[in-house]
Image 1 (cartoon, rainbow, N blue to C red):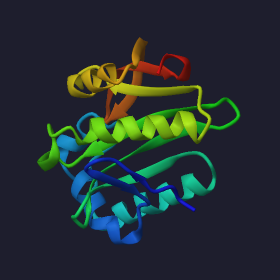
Image 2 (cartoon, rainbow, N blue to C red):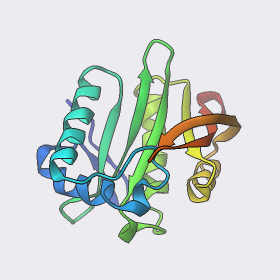
Image 3 (tube, rainbow, N blue to C red):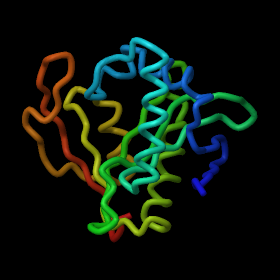
Image 4 (tube, one colour):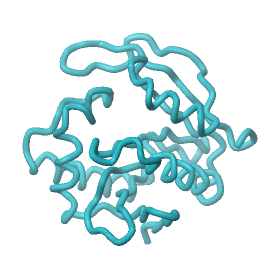
Length: 177
């Protein structure tokens, strides 16, 4: 069973085929993918591929991605979850995105707190990492506010639209949370 998580304002739930249009709305938006390390989606079929990828990662215990939905509203406003999940090494990397119409309302902070808690308490993680483009000041501030520490810079770590980018590496350890 996919874990359903709840916060004061949000439902974090499994992403299904019916969510492809909402996934497309996020990942086709240039402002959303600008610091994501991938190109903008061009078709809803590509978004359907994302939905399948998220499900496959969960079933193969390589990741878990929740859809972010406002309580009392239908439809996703973004996603959040763990990539590069290694149960053996008790670590994962966190990632998230939100449609710009919902930015600066504290939704990601709220979801992040719940997902971090789930990672440490239910998945048994000791370390949660995050990789952030140097230019993505909003995400860096969000992670630092959540207690993540900057570990260093990964040089030429991401390629997007044919350009290489340096990224910051952040981590949050269970013993420090």
